[in-house]
Amino acid sequence: MLVNIIHGALKQVQVIDAAMHLLQIFDRIAHRPAINACMEKEATELRGLYLRQCQNFRHEFDNNHRKPPLRKNEPIGAGSALWANALCTNVENGWNSICSSPVEVRKYDGSVENIYSELIEALTMYQKQKYSDWLESLAGLDALELQERLDQVSHLSNNTGLQFMYLTFNILYFSIVASAPKT
Image (cartoon, rainbow, N blue to C red; front, side, top):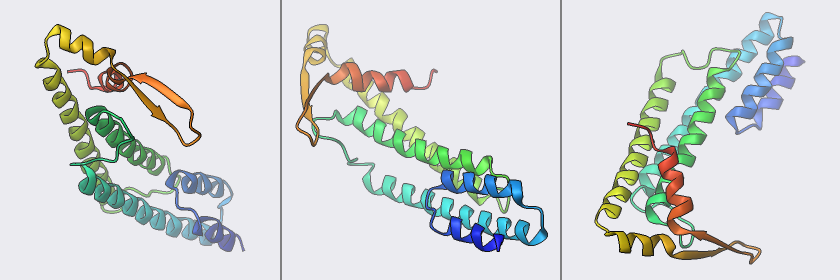
C-alpha cells in the first residue's frame, strides 16, 4: 500500500526539487525491502526526468542563443546573460536536488554528471562571452559618449500598465559585472 502511495505521489511531479523532497520524506519511513526497491525505481525515473529537463534546457539554449528571448527595451548583452543565468540556475537547482537525494541517483553511469557539467560549461561560457562583448562595446566609447549612454533612461511597463524606470546600464549591466567571475 505504501508503494502505491509513493508511486502515486511522484507520478505527477515534474519538478526535480519537489520530487527529491518527497523522496526524502518517504525515505524516513522506508524500512521494508519492497519500499526501498520502489524508492530506487522512483529515483531512476527522477534521474530520467532530470536528464530530459537538461536536454530541454540545452535545446532551448541551442535554439535561442543567437537571438535570446528578451523583454522589451532590455539591453542585448545583459538580457542575454541574464537569460543564460536563469537556465543555469534551473540546471544547478536540479543538480543540487539530485546530489542531496537519499537514494543514489547520479552514480548509475556518470551520464547525469557529464550532461550537467557540459551544460553548465556552455551556459557559463556564453555569459562570459556576452560580458566580454559588452566590455568591448564600452571600450570604443569616449568619456562623453559613455556618460550619455549611462544617463539614458528606458521605460518598461508590465501587464498591469505600471511604469518602471531603470537606467539601462546601471541596473542590468551592473548585474552582469557583479555576477561576473573574478579573474
